[in-house]
Image (cartoon, rainbow over the protein chains, first blue to last red):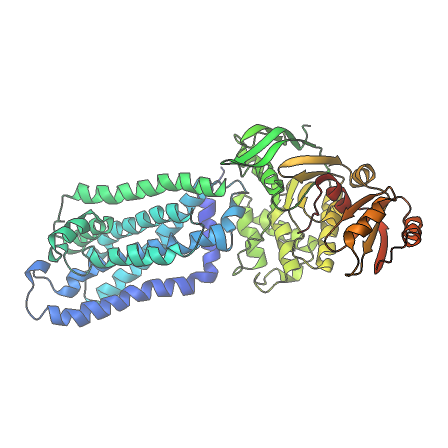
Length: 258
Length: 308
């Protein structure tokens, strides 16, 4: 039985990872943990002087942790959907070599996403274990919340790599991070409820895909009901993932089979 | 057995730009076939269509009897591709670069291990097996790329500018390896803008310019057909009136090409011509008589020099 082609791409990532895991993993795990310590413990002291109704009377750390989990998964997905893609198309051009073999552009896209799924899962899992160690979330609930968090990360990876594969210049990446990823990270109900925003901004935040991912993750982690019905939140995140897969199968082909 | 490449009116357009313009090709098994031409002549676009990584805009193309559009993956499994850029993963070892590529072809791991041994021996890099790619010299990296292209035991190799950027010694090592592959019966298709590379390696070649084939044949036949036996290169002193000197040379009845730094005259007997030059009162600073090359063929056919 021939191995599905996307799995061969996944295997290539895994082999290469033996050399690069230190740099990429340590940063990806350390950053959210630093956020957890600074915001959850430091800022949390200040917030928790009086019980806060907007947080559902929870400690700030408990409220923040699931949001940070989803947002970190998104960032990990964004990282995998940007730099490695540009390396493949422009810096090292390994994608061009891959598609000269039986690997097709869409196999490359799918294989990359499978690999991103594993990487994001590991990063999110480490985060959950550390957060449980902080007493920020019960381990069992944290593990449950991995599902929507990883799904959110992979969905962002899919959409971003579908776009980045077409990039001809590198400068766009800095802008993408500054004007898309960081604002999403800050304003999607990660650090404070979107109800705290002015009405118009709050309405915008509710359209952002990360907010839906955060709501799902938080609902599972805290055992509460999400802001909107489950299927709506889930539908948005899944739609993002499907859109990324479909768009990528077109854009990868356009870029790599000109 | 079908020819390796069979193309009829093969055309590639990018928007309104025509990169390859209705070319006809036939390449037989075991041949070393070259696309010679300057940058932008359409060589790489033609190669990419043959390699089933770029759709054909118009015309017909069969490679190993297969349709690159419908049977792309099956076809690519039988080709070995050496791209213009090495595209090696610099952080990985030589062996890992080969192993990952081998898995793209779904080759069993033990087969890959065995082939890596053989191929690294073939490209004379056995002792670098576990070395990272990054610090290797340009020539060594190029040989790793050759080994990578051979991992699937291809019937045909597509080489895009295989020695561009290498020093003369590294080029000769590479040419020697490619010649051995040809001896093993592997068909070689290569693009180059080096006439010496084309002369060294190719049984037959097409000269391309602006997407079209302007000449086709064996290197020696092309030279015989489009150039004279010898070429006299004349350098004039800076104060000499070049136009006047060219007129004097043209009056000898031979073909004259005035280049920015020298004047070429196409003759059959170089020494006799040099005597005639002096007899006509010209006093060049340097005169060189040499054999005609594909460079002269290209100049003749297009009015331009190959290298930029």
